[in-house]
Image 1: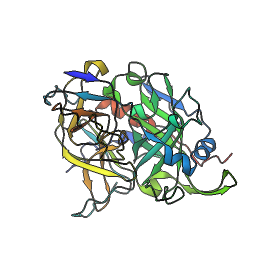
Image 2: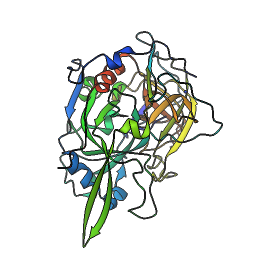
Image 3: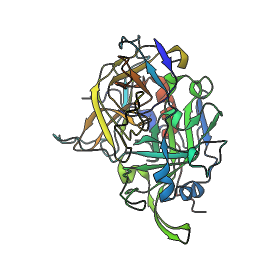
Image 4: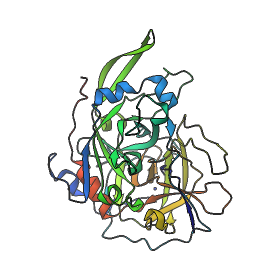
Length: 374
């Protein structure tokens, strides 16, 4: 197998809720995380992060085009297996209910774009303005975002990104001030990732969960050459857009949807996506081959031509269009060219197992609270 560096993360369900995770509500908001869970508060104050992302800067942010990709002849997979019994946590609003079916693919309100700046660089240089994809996920305080670890942590600088915000249901209007944040903007308070990604750069652990403050809606007005803002608190993320369920130790062969905001080009230079609106793929996962250069041994993937920008978007299992919810079973991590034609044809995620659940559980019990305006 030939590997070449370029990382892309993009997201991609009938589930019977087996082994409902009672642990979600069992720990206190201040409980210590397990030793292999890395927890770090954002260094950028929330107000500064949101205020940084003026409408014109959002329009100039670029995808993580220095993301990971892999060339491989064929897709003969590895030996990914569960490391314990399967478990699941239901989506927000479906803890004790059943939803109706829909014949259409309604895009989930939970999915959006995250914006951040690269650490150690001039934050006012547009080259450091980046975006990925992500999704709201169920948690005790309805304040949790799931994405790829490489969308929160810079393995070159060994530090978490700056000015990190999440905008669910993001869409790009014709003008810079049009309708980008219908449900508000949510600034990062706490990053949660696995030690094996942060320390070892192991992409079998390329997932992260971010606790965000309650959201705000921003009204921008340009006065002279400067943007001025007025803000309004809109409450918790999960109350506004819901949250996907979470599941782990499932079969490696399940039907999933992936959602995200692809924008990058294929290796041959073709650029079919713009990142302005959400896109989706659907397919059946299977184990992917090993990629030793990235310590990658336990990924699952399926046929999808997503490119950079979709990084961090969800793999959703048992997705129901009527409720726009399902179960998070992966996150977009790696794009694959399996036939050598310089076009991405598969997308993969780390296999969600008990290690993933540990990180999720630690994050799912953290309180954040209202957005600190000052």
